[in-house]
Image (cartoon, rainbow, N blue to C red; front, side, top):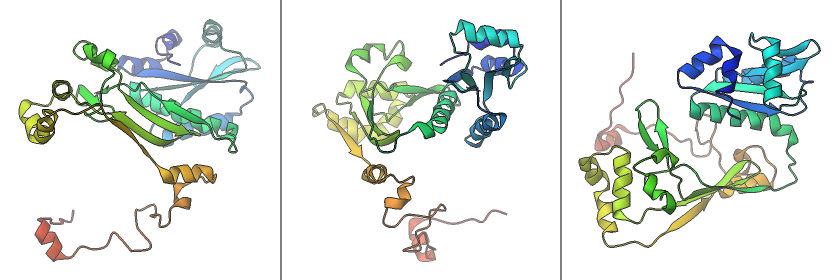
Amino acid sequence: MDFTDIVKKFNSNILNDIIENNGKIKGLVLPESSRYSRKILENVNNYIREIGGKGAVWIKKAESGFKSSLKIKPEKLKNFYKENEINKNDIVFLIGDTSSQSLFLTGKLREYLGKELIDKDKLEFLWIVDFPLFSYNEDEKRLDSNHHPFTSPKLEDIEKLDSEPLNVKSIAYDLVLNGVEIGGGSRRINDIKLQRKVFKLLELTDEEIDEKFGFFLNALKFGAPPHLGIAFGLDRIIMLLLGEESIREVIAFPKTTSSLCLLTGSPSKVPEKQLSELGVKFIEQE
């Protein structure tokens, strides 16, 4: 849930600072969890820090009233539960960050807390559709392609490209099995005018478009039918079918954590002659 506007009532400097810097406060309501110990709550906080977050704020009901990991008056916490129709035996975790990062962290927290609930004997499939065509790059203050710049927008959303591009959805899809992506694909743009418009929205100049994609646009002049596809990760599928935790267990020659192939010893040293032919030179940093 998005609690960004709701938590303003807490008057917390920490949460307000995140909001004032265009951040979002996302929340995860964990049912029937008020029995969770302080140690478990600290483990959650540490986990969020380990994956790149600033930590997780928790709110729960205790014997003496409502408590939080932030200094917030119990009466405000009580009203928060009542106004949002949250069961008093539920714990609420709040995560504040940029819009995209807060979603990512809350999603990872959901997976972390839900591990014990997964029945490994079941195969649960799920199609993920209606991905946004673009995302906003906070660092460069421009649009980015969510998938790649050749992904087709939904035909009914094309008219929104000029006025509200961030609300345009794409014809893209992922297939998920037991929480693991096992396949993905999209429909490609097959109209030259539409492809140029997408490039322009990504702030590519005419020179950059012609230099990087001129050959592709030239091919589109001759016409292309609507086309789409999907790619499957067979190793991932086998991993899930066998109930393994890591894809390394189903690959014949897996790499080590440092990307070393124990079978071939690669990557190995490159002879100076080959480096010279490629115009590559290594410079040691002092």
